[in-house]
Length: 275
Image (cartoon, rainbow, N blue to C red; front, side, top):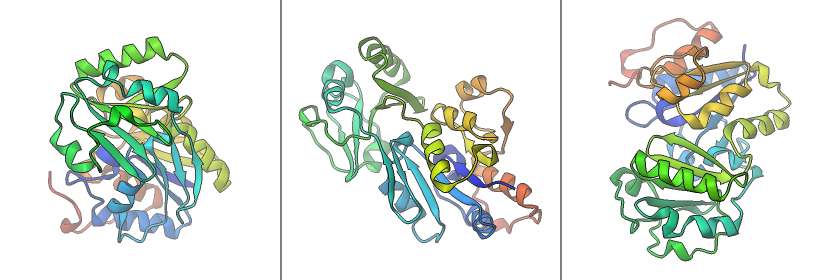
């Protein structure tokens, strides 16, 4: 049996309607009743995770902003790492941000700027306050910088950051059109190590589920890693021998957890979301 279950959200724990369906929630509740720690590990903002999990009454520990923030299930902040303010002030200038939807993740919420030449309707709807003058931000308290743009533009930005700020920041992708920048050394895997130490559990006894490049370090860190059947080709290429869970739309995480718990009865049809 697992000591903890750590799961990404989008493309992993969330179904095709971007929610935790009742079958998955019931499965996680059964795990919690067996004293298994439940951990959400996501690139999303912690306030966004609270919204997604409201009403589920599940004791989730949170790793958010790709590991820049770690919260205990009671909301206690256990760890925080900000991108150094001078780097933030450089990275939000047009040299890097032109042609993107630029977002800064602050503890109070995510700031977005929509005047950089790229409009992404879903991201605009998801994120919080609009700041048309984001390039003037002081840079303090930033957990994550995210550029949303076509992959070709993000490749240019990635190379420019790597050339100018090599060894100063961490870079990853949660989706092909989401390039994310955190403080050096920040990752879901490193955050999970910190959280496991705080919980007094061994990583070799933990399971982790993910589908994107930002899940790579986390899947490498645990004894029971699972990449989703819908995982990005780049993650699959990096972890070809990692066990595969099902599709996120078919509650792949829940099915794998139920197998580990010895729960084999099929769910009611209403518990599964339709593709």
